[in-house]
Image 1 (cartoon, rainbow, N blue to C red):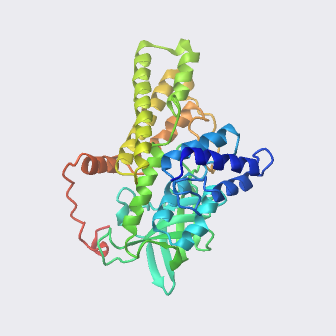
Image 2: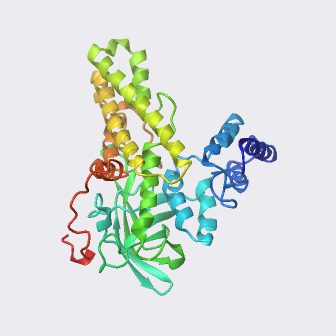
Image 3: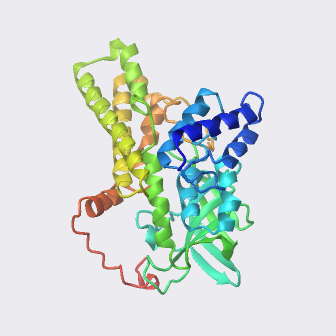
Length: 393
């Protein structure tokens, strides 16, 4: 069993053989992956050492103290948080060997082709079709709200492979090449003025059967691994005290006594406490992950993340008064990541509105928590056993 002492020794050896000050960033990251120090709980040969997940903090602390580069996790968050766990759970040995290393190093960005114009909250109603043609699948359809599609090299994709089955059972999960000539990415300009999201059109896109994850028709089960990890990655990120959205508001409060009122003080204290509770709950969730796969608790964390972000950003705009009505820059951009804390209050207020939609709408997540965490009776679902082709659309 690998322990903390052995991991420190391995990390020090990595630093000695590849000094961060004189080693190119990607070269260092590749060496870290090969040493099994990328994600220590992954298998040997795939960036890990089959070590307890909790020991990753030992490696990260040693590397941070030495000034070693990281893999810019915010830029490649979809790959790290959603694609990698799914590839590990359902990919063939060849798929894991091909994709996990460049994914972790950040050489290849990933996106997620799940939501569609008619299948957002009801994702299982998706209509994008995948038809088998020998050793390949031909995919046609449209996806929407796709983060990072404009910079992605690969995508995780779910498509309907059998319309004669009920909607949850006729879906297959694939790895899609975003450079295929049949893939068209169009920007979606948001309320912030930016086009962080995209719509993606798929026309006769050919995907080799070797890039199928899980069995044909079993894509919904595979997708649950992705979705559970997505909610954890959105709502359960590790942050320091006063990290995240509460930090800029607390900073403004301390530096601008002229803006203070008794009512705003009371509301800020309430939200500060809620933020700290959410932070500590996230720590507990990560400790639970050490023992197994993420469960529905990630949905509760994502719910809290959306509610808090919207309440805090609203308070910040109100605290700033007339200044809160200003918006710094409406320039049309296609950013690679979302930067909540590096922008102004107006951006935070507008962008946080999307938090209750992305990664699962609040309404859907409330159902998940009610049914799977609290054990309440499920809502009636009359379409559960009806063939997808016979559903009203």
